[in-house]
Image (cartoon, rainbow over all chains, first blue to last red; front, side, top):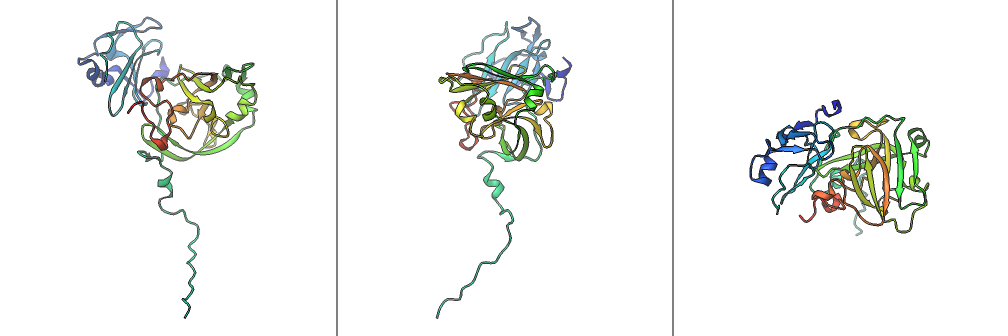
Length: 92
Length: 206
């Protein structure tokens, strides 16, 4: 996955604040399983793309989307595609 | 006694102050650089394997390889672009093929009303068909006189300059014609389905 190693990439800890806002708890140590390849990583270890209209957390092995987060001026939206991750509380 | 007739002084045709400002949609600021935004890793597609495909509600799908695509009639485009993250860049210079030219190569089903642009890496974005035709959109492979760089969507990028730039799908590989509107990658998570910068159509329901 050398193409992942460009300057736009961070790790899932970059989404720690946004996820804590949604879940009301620190999510970085929660394990996430890629729905595509089965790779398991803590959320904080996922590959994070933050220079985008939202935050996209991807599998470290195959780059499949695991979690997407969009923060609008009025709300925060999350989409969980990976397995094992608790369903987000209903956002307003 | 008649009023003295005085002609206005001729001051040349300098661009009046504020002309650029009038080209910047509400809530946007001007940039001189070209910010790179990306929702995923930059694909490095082998041009020998690259294709551009038009599929869905067409009589026969069509697909071009890279060399075939280069032989299609190309044009230069100079366009202002606006990203939903609030930057606007004026007079960006592209080279590519109008979507009108591409659609001439297929026979559209009468039900075709919406388009999903799809890209390497799985990105999608949805645009009503009428907003891609009549010179409004093109598939670009050149930028500023050079091949379009991978970080800006090369080898080829859909460019729909009158909508926020997330609609201008990087690494585009084709257009799917449909009879219904299917929300794309960002449109399915809070971003506006249409995305007109002049109406500040940034989000859904905000």
